Structures are given as structure tokens and as C-alpha cells.
Image (cartoon, rainbow, N blue to C red; front, side, top):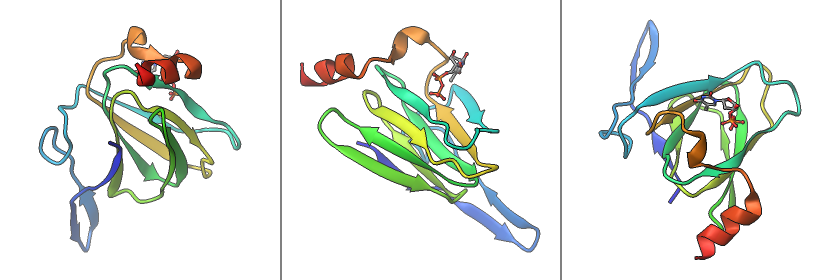
Length: 131
Ligand code: TYD
């Protein structure tokens, strides 16, 4: 199930430091990190699900909405804090939209990039969640 995860913050007068440790404060080991930035106004990212991949999505800067669909229900999460991550399990359709200017979407992933893990057709995704 998708859920918001609070990321610990070490705060002092020099600023904030947040830390994420694989299999400690998130439920998977981190094999890959990527980030979306310089997203043009009005652009949408995502539009797919993953068969096995688990991810944590963080608004490292700025804000955006993550719209999730588990095959039955749709839920929208607005991410706008650097110390909150959205855990997105396998078999979850996602769209990312409403990027603020300067937004950075940081993604931690449980596996290396593998195109065969993607489901890019929503009808196919729905069918797979029903079976
Ligand atoms: P995609 O995952 O569809 O983007 P998003 O979900 O953020 O909208 O990936 C876009 C392109 O980037 C696609 O051609 C595959 C490539 N890509 C990699 O080569 N490695 C990666 O780790 C990722 C996430 C994407």
C-alpha cells in the first residue's frame, strides 16, 4: 500500500540534513537514484506502473502532485516537503503533475532500470490487477 514516510531530519543552525537508509526507514534496499528537474510548466511525468519495482518519491525542492491508482482506487498526494517521501509499491499506476517551477523530484528505486518491468498501458495494468 502506498504511504507517506517521514524522513528523519538532523537540524542545527547550519541548516537541515535528512537521511534515508535502505531497509531501515524505507521498506527496500536502494539500487538506483534518479531525479526529474527543469520540468516545463504543465508537463506530466509517469503514466505507467511497475511489475516489481518499489520506489520512494521525494520533493527535494518545490512541489508536485503524485496521482496513484492501485487498480481500484485513485489517490492524490501533494509532495512539498524535503523530509517526507511517498512510498510507491509495485503494481501502482502513477502520474506526476503540477510541478512548481524549480521543482526537483527525487526517486529512490529498489532495482536497476529495466524496461521490461514497466506497464505503460493502463488497460493492461487494470487487467493485471484484476487477475
Ligand atoms: P520514464 O520512467 O518513462 O520517465 P517518467 O516516469 O519519469 O516520466 O523514463 C523516461 C526515459 O528515461 C525512458 O526512455 C527511459 C529512460 N530512463 C533510463 O534510461 N533510466 C532510468 O533509470 C529511468 C527512470 C528512465
